[in-house]
Length: 497
Image (cartoon, rainbow, N blue to C red; front, side):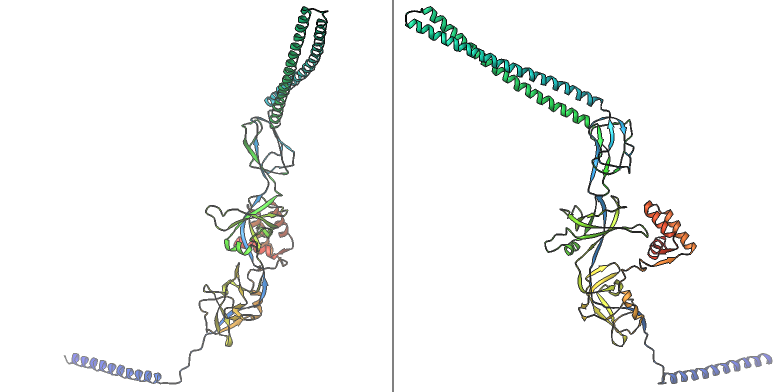
C-alpha cells in the first residue's frame, strides 16, 4: 500500500511539472508574437514586371484583299446526245472518260441503213417530181402553140364572115353563106376559148409540179439530215467526260452519251458577302474588270493563275446571301472544272493604316500601348479589315496619333492597364507586325537529313488527293540537295509535324 501511494504521488508531481512548463512556453511565445507584430522594419512586397513582345505602329498604304473560296467551271460545255436511235456500229478510240478530241473528229456512228434508205427514196421521189415538172413545162409550150393556132384560125373565120356580108350587101352572096360563115367564126372563137382554158390548166399543172418538187426537196434535205445525225462529231477541241457507251449498244433518240468540256475556257464562280461586294464595286456599282488571283493548294506546290471578273449573278439565289461573281481565267494548265480553289480579290488601297497582329486587339476593340515608365495603357482602336492573322487599324486612332507607339503583340489575361512591363526584343517588332507573311521566305533553301527527307517522300507518295503532275514535281524537288523551306513547312504542317 505504501508503494502504491508513493507511486501516485510521483506521477502527480510529474504531471504538474509538465503543465507548468507548457504554460511558461505559451507565455513566452505570445510575448514574441506581440513584439514581432510591433516591429516597424518589415520588408515591403516587390512589384511584378511582365515581359511582353511589342510591335511598332508604322503608318503605310495597304491594299486589303478578300480571300474566298470558289469552284472552277468551264464556259464551253456540250452534252453529247444521240439525235437518231439505233445500234452503235463504230466508236472512236478516244471516246472515253478523259479522252482528248479535236474539232471535227468522228466520235461515234449509229447504224445508217434505215436513214440511208429513206434518203434514197426521197431522192427518187425528187427526180420523179422534177420529171413531172419538165413534162408540165412541155405541155405549157404546146398549149401556147395551140392557142396561137386557134387564134389565127379565128381571125381567118372573121375575115371570111366579113367577106360574105360584103357580098350579101352587093346582092352577090346568099344568106345561107353568111350564116355558114357566122357559124364557122363562132366555132373558131370557141376553139380559142378552149385553147386558153388548156393554157391555164398547163400553167396550173406547172405550179403544182413546182410545189411538189419543193416538197420533195425538203423531204430529201430532212432525210439527209437524219442520215447525218447517225454520226456524232466533236464541235470543238476538248476532253470527254461522263462517257457511258460501248460499241453494239442500242441507243434511243436524245439519249445522253457523254459530255464534251473545253479545259482552256475556264472561269471561277465565287460568292462574296454584301459588305465585301459594296467595298469592291466602283462608283458606278460595277465589279466587272477587277483582277483576281486563283490558287489551287497542292501541298508544297500551289498552282496559281490570274483572272478578271466578267459578270455577276442576277439574283442572290434561294437561301443564299451576298453576291455570286464569275471571273474568266487566263490559260491555266493543271486546273480542271470542279476544282475547289481559293480566290483573292484586291480592294481599293487604304492610306495611313497600320498592320497589327490579331492577338494585339481585344474583343472590345482595345490595344495595350507601352506608355511612360513602361506601364501599359488601354487605347481604343477601330478595326478596318481582318486579313488572316492580322488586322488593319488607322494609324490615327480614337485616342490620337498612334504612329510610333509600341503595342503589345500578344495579350494575356495577366496584362492590363497600369501594369508595368519589360519590352522583349523591341528591334524585332517590325517583323511581328505582319503575321500574314509566311514563316519561311520563298527563296530560303534547306538541307535535309536522310530521315527527314524519307518521311517527306513517303508522305507525298502516299497522297491520293494530289495530281500526278504535281506529285512528280514535288518528288523531283525533294530529290535535290537543297529543298525550298516553304514547301517543307507546308508538307510537314499536313503531316502533323
